[in-house]
Amino acid sequence: MNSLTSIKQINELKAEFLSKSENESFARMIVAAFIAPLDPTIEELSDIRTAVSEAVTNAIVHGYSEKRGNVYLECSSVGDTVTIIVKDYGKGIEDVAKAMEPMFTTNSDMERSGMGFTVMETFMDSIKVDSIVGVGTKVIMTKTIGKNRL
Amino acid sequence: MQVNFFMKGTDSLVTKVSGELDHHIAKTIRTETDKRIIRGNVKNLVFDFTDLHFMDSSGIGLVIGRYKLVKSLGGNISIVCCDGCVNKILNMSGIPKIVSVYPSLTELPENA
Image (cartoon, rainbow over all chains, first blue to last red; front, side):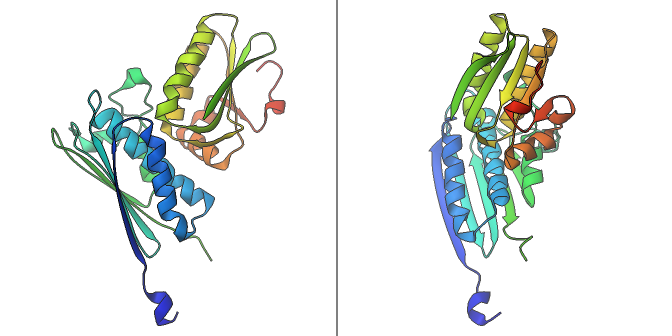
């Protein structure tokens, strides 16, 4: 590898939108466009779009539940590694470890499957959740594109 | 996103979802499907995901919820799905253990 190709390209994007469910597809579009230059496979693209959809849905459904607020989506890439942050200033999560258990949901009557965090964990390389009750929740996810590339 | 409903045989309702299935659209699909099931003359339900290219865990909730309803009325539920990404999340959820998944509508058994 020569010195030119070894320089890691960086990029950043920040978006802010109202916690309306129609913005879930908008968030997926933003992320898909952001990672397109990294030439992801169809599966990698789908994995990231799905994880973002879960995080944004959580912010809208659980973070803000009844009220409206803003959801913050931050994407950054260093080389082939993408970091995505989804943040809300909603009600926060009391017990993050419990919320991340498969099938756990506080909204069973709304037919949430309780699989959101499990999907994020499975489809991304790493996930970290910071939450303070009454302040908000921040989900930080990373994934390296092209790990399986020859 | 598009949702279409049609009957297959005398008592099977097909809910065909095209495009993307997320939390935003899941509610509409749920309400419209349940309305048709509760109205009567529907025993079995088929989710046709042939033209679905994206699904998140909202789709899992939708299928499991309809599974409970249809089973309680003595019917069966099936899924038609050929997209790799949709299959990935279906498999992850364990849905194929309780619901039969077919690669195309023509491969559905007569009584499905």
